[in-house]
Length: 77
Image 1 (cartoon, one colour):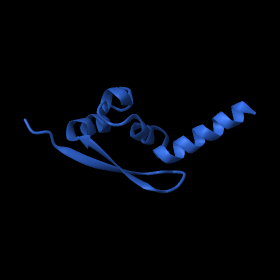
Image 2 (cartoon, one colour; image 1 turned 120 degrees about the vertical axis):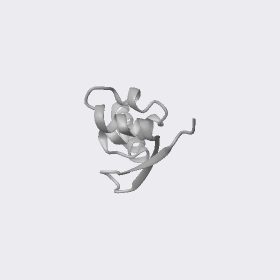
Image 3 (cartoon, helix red, strand yellow; image 1 turned 90 degrees about the vertical axis):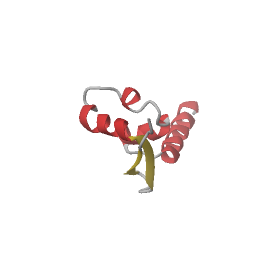
């Protein structure tokens, strides 16, 4: 059986960059209908964790890495 893919576009709330997140159509349907009932890891197991984060926080992987780096520097001081 052929797997059909879609791309969901999400805009980063920090840098405003638009990121395309590929996912299986079945995952997208589950995401739209059950995201309040299931964890994002269970809904989108094949999507990179950094991209899944965009659905939770709205922050792209690059901005998330910068924030994490900044927080680690703050902890070191």
